Image (cartoon, rainbow, N blue to C red; front, side, top):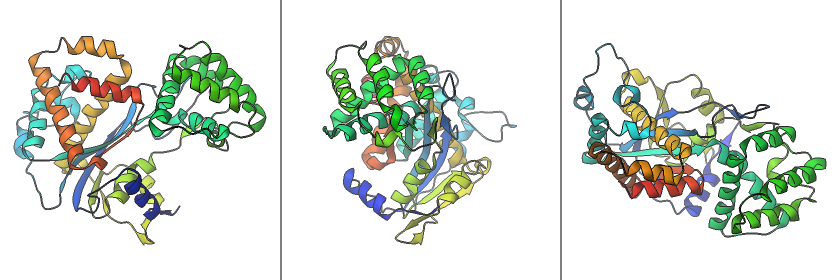
Amino acid sequence: MNFETKIIRESHISLFDLTGLDHKLKFYYDETNNIRKYYLKEDKFNESIKTNFILGGLVFENEQSFDLQPLFKTFKLQKNISEVKLKHIAKGNFIECLNSIHLQSIFGFLISNDISIHYSSLNFLYFSIVDIIDSLIDATDIHYAPFYNRELKNDLFICVKKNIKIFIELFYEYQFPNLQKDRINDFIKNIITIFEKEPNSIGNRTILMLLRKSKDSKELVFIMNEKSHQLIENFSLFYARTIYLFLNSEHFFDKEDSVEPIIENLNMTYAGEKIENYKFIDSKENLYIQLSDIIVGIIGKFYNYINENGIEEIQNELITINKTQQKTLSLFYNVLEKSEEKNKAFIHLTISNDEGRKITMIKSYA
């Protein structure tokens, strides 16, 4: 395929008021929870609904160079370990990992050397179902402010998670996201039945109104004419995003057979010129990639923790964390904040408002 990026890059800059994209930077990447595809089986998704795909790592100015050997030596790992990963640095869930003094050393090193991190977080389930709301809005021609639109998507997301078995059966039966015209009415009626049992909130009432107004529609544009049960075909656009946004930068990906063809096959161009600002390198020979693996790994655990626990559960646990955990958490948020302050395009979130609120709440304990 040919992927011309000029228009999409300019639209991103305008829509999100992005700046600093022409700077010469070095991006290093690793990923966690790369499941290749996200699809629906007869009785479940192929991946947990509590998992996010994370892609990211280190980013710094082109002229900067850092010797990571002294930092890695402080880990005092066995000599036969050829590639350092998060499991060598910290173990357990996110809260348990906060006990790691090695993580403290890493975050402290990033802060003292003014090294930023970048990452994209994609909630598989959220990304796969929000087109339902967009389709209902398109069918009714009722438009809402962007924030309220996101709140409706969040309410749908919460409802689907709460009634996951019912929705899996419904999605599978109606070949979601490849809904047929003659089945729109029945599909919507089934969702109405579910929402009528949900709490009587403003968001749920609005969704019910949209459903009722749309049930006789001939088209739900964003959940039709797709591959049946195929929710995410691949993650190519998430790999491509920073490449075409930061055109003057260098992008270094971990050499992996499943990733390289995805990016290469996009055949990205900008104003007709082929984009060639990225390379694939062996992580065993590059400590920047290995440190990116650790960073992405802990961010992955962070989102797992958010998705596995409610706000009250998280609050109750954070009250009990020890001084080491509290310090590591504070350093973690410090790195995140400094990175976003340097360039908000470093952080790209395709997540629910529910996740966002938990992230903000946890920050209050950092």
